[in-house]
Image (cartoon, rainbow, N blue to C red; front, side, top):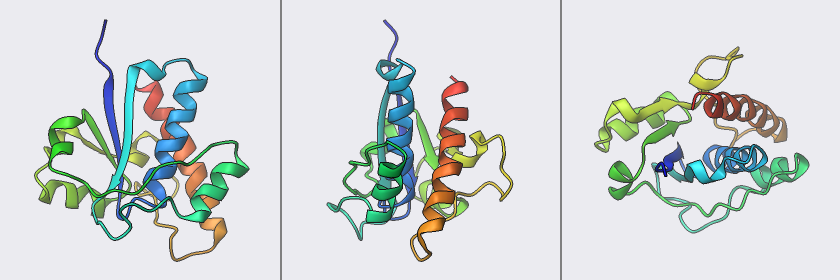
Length: 153
C-alpha cells in the first residue's frame, strides 16, 4: 500500500481561493476514483478569518458548479511544514510568506503552474475586493489548475 500524498492549498485568509481550490480538487479526485491517494487541506498565511466558513461568493460559485465548499478557515501552523508533501500557493506573495515561515521552497508550487492556459500569469488573483465575476474567473483558473495538478501525479 502506498502512502497518500498530503496536499495543502494556501492563500492569504483561507476564505476565497484556497477553500475553493480544496473543494474543486476533492470533487475531481472523487470523480476520478482516486481520493484514497490524497489527503487534502487548505489554510491561510493570515489568521483574520480563522474559524469562519468560506466567503459566501466562493460557496456560491461552488454551488453553481455542483461543488460543495465546506472548509473552515484556519491559519498556517508550524505542523503544516512537516505535515504536507506539497504546498500550493495561490500567488507569489503567499509563496514568499510560506518561505518566511520556514517552508522548504522545494515543496512549494504556485497553483497556476499546473494551469495549461496561464493567460494572466502565474498567480491566482484574490477576488475578495471585486465582484462576483472575479470568483467565476478564479473558479475557471482553479479547475484547470486542479486538473493539471491531478494529471501530474
